Image (cartoon, rainbow, N blue to C red):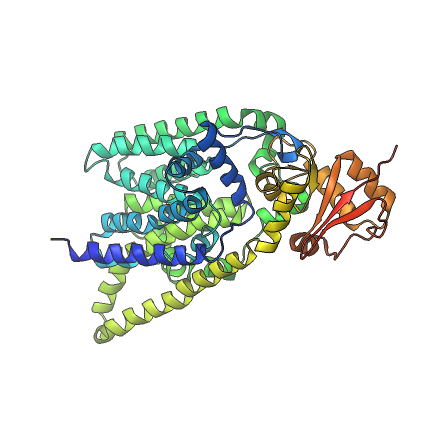
Length: 496
């Protein structure tokens, strides 16, 4: 007979996955950055290999990335249509976090109620729920995988088979994403905390920590060696131009952090960090604290993108909340308000619904609204059908992947700046093309990048603060070839 807690866990998984799919299928399209991953999956399905030399991005460049996530989607694409794969599989992977959270909290507390409550909360971390609904994001795989690795690390002294699970999972993570680096910092802080508290460090832990760190460093060095040689320390910030660096590594206020993580895990999670840093001891909690402090350090010094850092921090704080929950209930039982224990638990749950579930739904709705509309997608498909294959098209930075994946045409830039020497200059030149009042300057810059078509979309209007090109009245040089909610101009003139 299936245990009652497993039925509840299955129900939580179904609810989280059901809500994710409900929002994902509100639109047949994806957010702009998803189209890079979709293009890679499509190419792997056809050829067995990802695109490392892209003739369309930046009108021709080399790409550096870890393709494991794309291979997973490509495997399912053998049996299932690509659009369905990209809607379904990432959300299934992301929903697995609720099961892994249950396993971890149960390991920490031996309390099934705490594990189930934490599992439910982990399914509705607003920043993770909203930002991975429709983005075909590798983090839908990376986050569950990282916390499964942590679970294996906690279990290695109970069952030796978890050593093998740990090694395999770390190897997959190293090939899947560069965020594996956060493990190295978490390991270091964990060892320092254990040492300061004079707790014995097990030999098996030391060996696995050294193996994991060396493997992650080695694989990432091989993949990103050329980028490091070209960009130096700027590789940390992915060579992102200063003009937009603040959007990627911006400061985060306390209020925003609480909104994106949820007030219950945020407050109670930090209570646990304080208690176990200064008053209590626990090897497992120290590892989670190491992970939390790593995320905070990277966020504080702007060494990690805000969304990514908050996702890591949010999951860790949920786990720490799960550790604290039985202690909170035990404390209530010893006080005069013990007869109000059920209403207090109900109040905690109500606060969670208001500050986690509702923001998750609101954030997901916002992300769906911000996805390209049918009329916008049609403009990019028009380019595919009505322009020559070698054509260079200028759109907004966010639309670079759409130009490559949907229009199958060359772009001037997109959001991947690795190995690009003139990224700053391209952004500045694009701004001048869209905002200059001087026709001769625009033509000179259009000729510089061999741009034949200029897109005036909602994204372009919002980013550059324009409604049209100021020099578009010269029909001899700028022909309006597409005029709907999105406009497309063809550049006809050249300067000798």
